[in-house]
Structures are given as structure tokens and as C-alpha cells.
Length: 329
Image 1: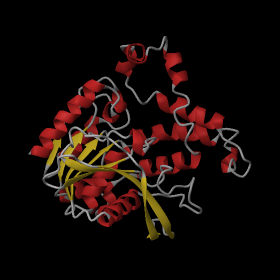
Image 2 (image 1 turned 120 degrees about the vertical axis):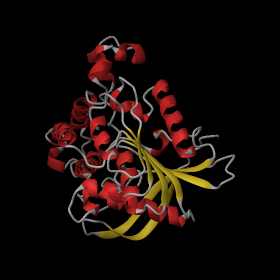
Image 3 (image 1 turned 90 degrees about the vertical axis):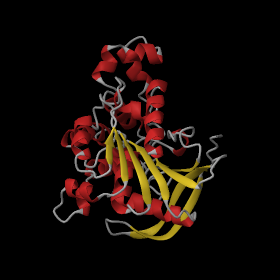
Image 4 (image 1 turned 60 degrees about the vertical axis):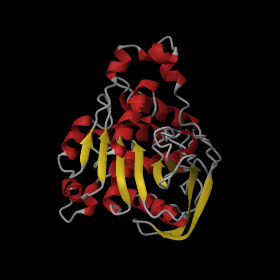
């Protein structure tokens, strides 16, 4: 199936955010049409943190019989975000993101989604889809994500955020008014972020040498320091804050995410990486105990978090097999 990602925009003239503001928004998306779609099934694949539509792993071979909608979450710079929308809220909520995506699906005359498949923040979006629209989503695949962001995950994000906001060229948020591109801040953010992408095992095995051909860890870090250079700092920050605030407990009277999980009727495939430092598989083991239709499949990898985003062919093939089996069930 050809993967031709032409970016389109869906305009919502009046959208009310959880934080209160109401304004027009645009949702960026791309449609990958199936060449063999006898059942007319549709799958939605949202972007992750640092992800754009065109580099999002969309499993086109696994979903060959599906029409695939790859959608940019609000705040990522392609859909409405601080960088392109005046007075965009400083506080963004996953409920806003998923609501905007559901409006997009309705506008495309999609009566239901056979699957929502997401990695990292995309996985958290898949969880929110299942909690908000269980009658609309038949299957959800959470790859390296969680029902609630852990305290450890929250604490990690404080490091890159601080590296960015305390840089001299971020100018306490005044970089735009001063016409400055905060290169030093974005470089510091990338370097602080990078160590967490892979695992201690990945470094011990010197995978940076085998996979990337780098001569040292320092060279590998230097090579990745421009990873977020194309991003606007406020987009990175608004998404990081939403990531930190993720908690399905918002849908339960008692505020517990476990209560929400017990109510979810959507079939769920929870697929963490065994060595992920952000989203620990132990948290997912707990979550699956509360899901009525939940299956846990742990990616056997040393690649850490990036395994779930297509970091290497072996892990991607493993995920494809798991997803295919899950959707056939």
C-alpha cells in the first residue's frame, strides 16, 4: 500500500478547550487510503511527542485493509498550537486533543474506528479515546504509554523543560518578541532529553556504535542535539505539560484511573517496551488487571522507549505481528 501523506487541515470554527477558552482551531491530518478495503474499516494513528505526521509510524502493511488517518495532536505545530495560533491556551488537555480528533472523524463521515493505535503520547491518546468514546472505538493499541503519567516520568520531563526555559535565548518566553531563535535552549533540551530515549542496556551493548555508526557516546549525543531544532519552544512545553498531567482518573468520580480502566469496554492491547525508561512496563502490568478486555504484550528489546516508535526493524516487525493478531481476534 503506497504511503502518500498529503497533509490536509480540518477547520473547527468554534472549539472550547477544557481550560475554558473558545476559539477556532485547525486539525492537521493525512489519509492513507487502502488498496484492499472490503470491510471499509478505518484506523486512527495520532502523533507522539516530537512527532510530525510524515514521520509517524502508521503500520501501513499491518493495516493494509484499513483506511488510515494519521492525525497531528493539538500543540504539535501542524495542528493548532502556540506557535501558529494567537492566544492558544497555556494548558492543554488530552480531552481537548481527542475531542478535536473525533470531530475530524465525524467530518470525514467515519461512523466508527476499528482501531486507534498510538505510540508514547499517541498511546496516551489511545487510552483517552477508549475512555471517552468506547462505543466509537472497537480496538485501541497503546504502545509505550500509560493510563496515568507516573511520578518518575513527570520528574524526568522537568529536566528538559528547565534546560529550555532557563536558557538565555529563551528570554523568559520573550524570544519571539525579540526575534530570537532559542538555539541554545533547544540544544540543551535535546541533550537533556536524549539519555532517556534508549535504555542502559542499549548503552552497555554500545548500540550507538552498531546502529548509528558513532565512535562514542559523546558523538551519539552530539549527533542528536538538533533533534528539536525545528520545533517552537512553546509547542514543546505545552505538550510536555499535557504529558505530565495525563490521568484517566479525570473520568471517575473518585479520581482514580483504576476506576476508569474498569469501565472501559474497548478491546485494549497494551504494548510497553521492557526497557522503556519513560513508561515502565510494570505500570502497564497493573493497568491490564483492571481492563475487562485488556491484553499485555511486552516488547522484548534493549532499545528502550524508541522501540515503540519504529526505532529498529526487529522490534517493529514484532509489534506488527502482535497488532495483526490482536485485530484478528
